[in-house]
Image 1 (cartoon, rainbow, N blue to C red):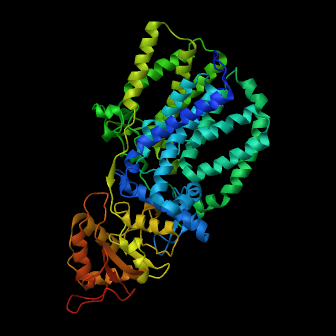
Image 2 (image 1 turned 30 degrees about the horizontal axis):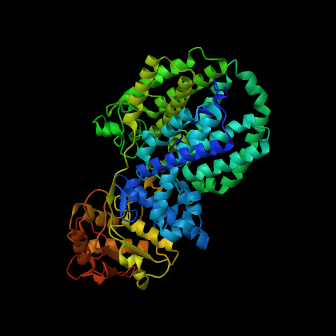
Image 3 (image 1 turned 90 degrees about the vertical axis):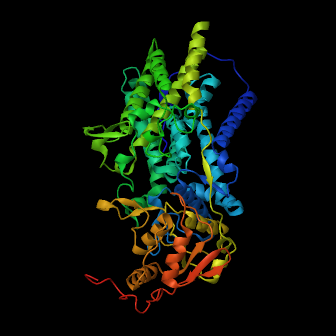
Amino acid sequence: MAVATTTAPLAVSEPEGSTRPESRRQGWLRHTLVALLCLGMGYWVSSGLWADPFRRTVTYNEGDHAFFEWLLGYGVQILRTGANPFYTDLLNSPHGVNLAANTSITVYALIFAPLTYVVGPQISYVVILTLNLAGSAFAWYLLFHRYAVRHRAAAMLGGLFCGFAPGWISHANGHLNWTAGWVAPVILWWVLRLRTSRRWLLNGTVLGALLAVGFSVAAELLFFTALATVIFVVTWCAGRGTWPVARRAAATTFAALGVSAAVAGTLLAYPLYMHFAGPGSFQGTGFIQRNYVEDPAAYLFYPYRSVGALLGLSRGDLAPNQSEGASFFGLPMLVLMVVGTALLWWRAGPARKALMRSLTIVGLLFTVLSFGPRFNWFTKEYPGVPLLYAPLTHLPLFDSALPGRLALVVAGVIGTTLALLADRLLTRPPSLRGRLLWGAAFTLALVPLFPTPVLTVERSPEPRFIADGIWKRYVKNGGVITALPNASASAPDGQRWQAYTLARGSKQFRLPDGYFLGPGGRNGTGRIGAPGRFTSVMWSKAAHTGYVYDIDNSERYKVRSDLAYWNVRAVFIPDRITGTQGMIFHESLVRNMTDLFGPGERVGDVLLWKVRPGVDPKPVPGQGHDGPRRPFE
């Protein structure tokens, strides 16, 4: 999620001091060098995947990695067949999946569809991940350089922090949508133009289109960006020195915002309908919010993928999981922020004070909100200590958000403060002793936060049975087939392999289950995946624990009913399959399937069982009642 930063540039204060004028050519050259630096950093963070995109996956959160590859493959189908971008029946047979209610990255899927078709979703995924990280840092750099500071070095420092802050590196573990931190600075750029430019119609139109794109890429990030921007603007306008400026700009700004609302509303009318009221929609989120909060102690330590972690200064157990560590700024950075904010306030003019007041309010507010509805300290929850997020938990939009991600807004506030502080020190250089002290403070705060590459592991190759299209001999176009265990968050390979088939643009098969968010949670909320049926639970238990069932006709009846419900025509077990929770017990799956159906057919690199829905697996004489288990049986 990313919203980090809607707070910076609304500053509207002229940076103090001056720098030597540069030619347009020099400016573009320096912008290019900064862009290359950002791109190099993006490659560094994702280098584990670049080593072998076809055989490597993130160590933590393989399920989301597979899901986003699936979405990229589906983008080819959208362009090739005119498939609905916001709903699909290729997963979760027979019901399908509401993609609008998931993080469907529709814009990415469509823009990168040609690349996906040529080289596969594995390459498209790592390309987008790298560009997201690099583009976020570069967009922040441009925003700071244009609106907040005079010194390019200060803008670059703030941009690099905002783009590669610990939270973004954490989300690089499978969250392709949440690494799109560029959404916040790009939208902020156009929000600022509403006040500074008279071209209200053009600015409003562009902003409306950007809001639609932001919703498509990361709706939760867009919500946080909008929330932080509104709070910043209101607090900035409330100052005595800034209120007259706000009044003069009000007419043009509100006219442009009206255009933005009309454009965004038109573009998002159908996606919003699908998201909130379409088939397969749900209320709230599929996650328990109280489990996805920032422990205040996490702010004091360093992220697990950082130089600080190499020095033993990390506490990974303070994060909900390795892809949700949104803070982890370290104590030296927090101290630098307190001292730096005080310096920027000291003897500042009215405009700068208005900026720092708004920036401080947003930073402190979102810090507290990130703690969630109840106070935690070193992983222990204190239910008797409700916090600011508690009354918001059941409000629309807030009920769908994960509170810990609000710390990404704090990352934007810190990055903005770093840029302003560095600009102040470069504009009014302190004494030699002061320069040494500030240099040591920046070094101590920033060096431990320097990211290390996201960890990766080997994943199972696509079976030739799928890659060579052999499956088409057993299932018609649009028929249902499944690898065992059924595709899920803990066994995502089957969904990945379907993604690669989608990217090739040929005939398609459907899957029962899958990894997605859908209805079926408590009180109308969402859940991860489809509600469990006997057969999917049986296969999952056998795969992850090695359990071998004592099969009788009652179990055969349940399996037969489930296969008919899904309309499955064939089931196969690959020679190699990956599980996110450890080893997959291949032999346990084979034994359970053999007890149900008899020996499988060897077809290339898979064992295959053909299924006649409603008929297979047939009952075996002498092995119990063929039907629901009777009472006391």
